[in-house]
Amino acid sequence: MPIGIRPTNDFAFKKTFGSERNKTVLMSLLNSILELSLPITDLTIENPYNERDFQDDKLSVLDVKAADDSGAIYNIEVQLTVFDGLVQRIVFYGCEIYADQLRAGDDYQELRPAFSICLVDGLLWKDSQQVHHAFVFTDRKTGRTLDETLTIHTLEFGKYNLREEEMETASMLDCWLYWLLHAHEYEPAELLRLFPQQQIQQATETIVRISEITEDKAMYDAREKALRDHQWAIRQSYQEGIKEGKEEGREEGREEGREEGREEGREEGREEGEIKLIRTLQQILCISVSNTDELAGMNLQQLEAITAGLQERIRLRWTSSDG
Image (cartoon, rainbow, N blue to C red; front, side):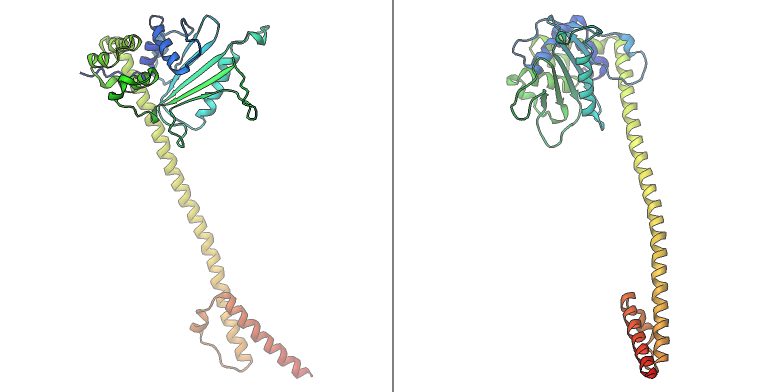
């Protein structure tokens, strides 16, 4: 029977990567993403897993924050929904992580490197198939980089398409991404066979325990329900927005129609007036009077041209009579 516990669920993710007993699991994931010249060998988790964080059913972003012996800061989170402004939020949050190190009276030289990592269950940039982006402060002209400051990593699950048969030769990062996306689909023994790496096996054992412990499973289910409710509310808002947009569009259309109708009415009134004027001028000139239907087939510009011609003939006749 499949484990049925999605590692990207905020409760499962925090319990897997945010507990002291699993800090080697967190280090493995971070090292696979960051690919530092010197890998992380020890960490202190600064916001360890706490069940109280999950007592209410509100959906919140729960990240895992840690620091190494040199003081470098590491923050990793999962974003299950992509929304307008998410990129700006990722940058803002990364800057906060970097700046929050400094306290009143501290020297700027005490700031240590900060690494902000966002795992996105969706797509941020549809014009690229690249899963992993790493952003640093770099001068456009010289390529000089502001090292030892802030680095922001994004990984888009929506672009990840490796298959099970590729895991044997896949990189550690690809193995972790596959595990995060598909662990819930496997039976425990199958998953342990597929991933012999010690840290991934430890992570697997963690989500297996969640599925077996009544309280943990209940907490996991509550978080899943909160997510479904959140996504449903987003869809409802979207549908209501579409409905309101359509109604506003119809109202605007009706108003435009009324305005167009008034304009068309004015146009038709002017055409009818020109037709009557033409027939009157023709009678004054004692010439053949045009058929109404014939004149009705002309547009306003044509009618105005005929009127102008008739008026000119009358003016010339009056001028001749005066002479």
